[in-house]
Image 1 (cartoon, rainbow, N blue to C red):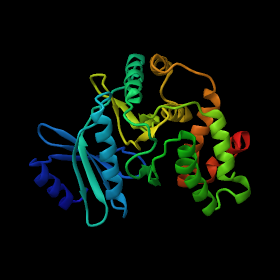
Image 2 (image 1 turned 90 degrees about the vertical axis):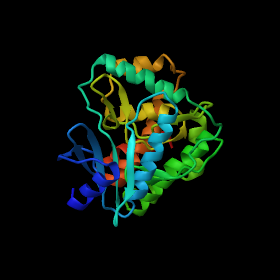
Image 3 (image 1 turned 45 degrees about the vertical axis):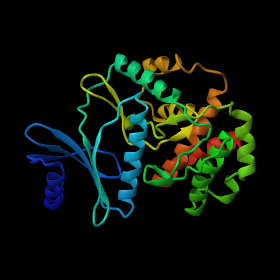
Length: 287
């Protein structure tokens, strides 16, 4: 972190930063622990052209989750543009190694978030991001249509344009929609985290579960669960606790793979050909 940004943050927060430590904060932005004599803050800095827009979307997502009063998120203190890029400052949550009791609590709190439903529309009031990729959220009253048009089609087009998938491998939207309509149940919109892998939650020192780095929208609650299963890191006590509110209704295996297809396409478009085989297998199996 350069001196001018340090001084700017000190001025805006009326603090004196005594120590700055570079820490892990994901693949997209630089992350820092800022320490004063009495407080600690987490700061993300990114100098890409769309960084400030990304940070605003992150702030709005965290605010939306916070307003449900179902699960904790870090408090945002600053979200500011730079001459190029932007930065975000929030409270620092001291993490601890998770236990089965912690994961059980996370399962209950996530279920409470998913029970929060105040709309009959799927999507969100504005576009946001999934990782560093734009995520369209045009609203729709039909879940299968929303999922195909707003999730699968844009990522498939991106993969085709980048020559990561061939035109012959990509089903037409009508085929995608017919398959999803046949597999998706009637869905009540839930507020989703939207990108719930193991790096996007943490357990604080006092055992409180926190969600970070959301890509929120109203969707089927199983989408978040499908993402938790894609790369692991949650455990039996989490799923047992969650299922108390959302018991299985049948067809979860197919829906999980179709919901994971979106995230695999995102990873294909972000990180390249190592995800081709997984994407192709799901496309062949269901479409």
